[in-house]
Image (cartoon, rainbow, N blue to C red; front, side, top):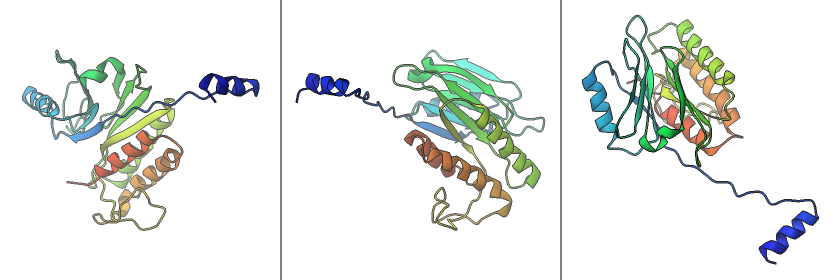
Length: 230
C-alpha cells in the first residue's frame, strides 16, 4: 500500500499519522574553574574551551566580585556571576558559537545557582540549564540543606519542559546501598550522612526523569559524575 493510500485509510478511520520526532543531541558540560576573577583566567578558559566540542559549559567557582557578560567575535557568549561576601562561589555559563542564537537569558539567581534559558530555534527545543555550586562538606547541615531547598524551589518554579541541572555538588555519595539508588554507581568514596540531602534531591529528579527525555537522563549522569569532592 502506497503512502497516499495509507494516509487516506487513516483519515477515513479518523486517524492521523504522527509526525516523526526529531532528536537533538547536545553536549552540556560542567567545569569548576576555581577562579575566573582575572582577565588572564577568562582568556585561558576561552582558549581551552575552543579545543573541545561543547554546546554549553556550566561554570562554578567564578569568585568574581563583578558580573561579566561577553560576546566574542568568534561567536561564543560568556556569562559570569559573582561570589558571596566571603569570596566563595559564583556560577556562570559559556555558550558555543552555533548555539548563541538560541540564548534567551542568563540569570545568577544566587551566588551558587545560575539559570540559562535557551529559546527554540531550528531543531533545538526550549531548554533551561541550571548551574549549581553546592556547599562543601565543611559547611553546616543547615546551609547544605538550604541550598538544596533553594535549588528545588527554582526548579519547580521554572515551567520549561526540558530542564537540566549541572554543576559541582561537592558530595561524597559512596557506593550504591540499595537497588533503588540507580543514580549511584557500585563503586565510590565513603558515604557522608550529612549529604543525605543530595541523594534525596537526585532521587526526586530521577523519579521525574524516568518518564522524561533522554537528554535529561544523560545530564543527570553528568551531574553525578561531578559530585565528588576534590
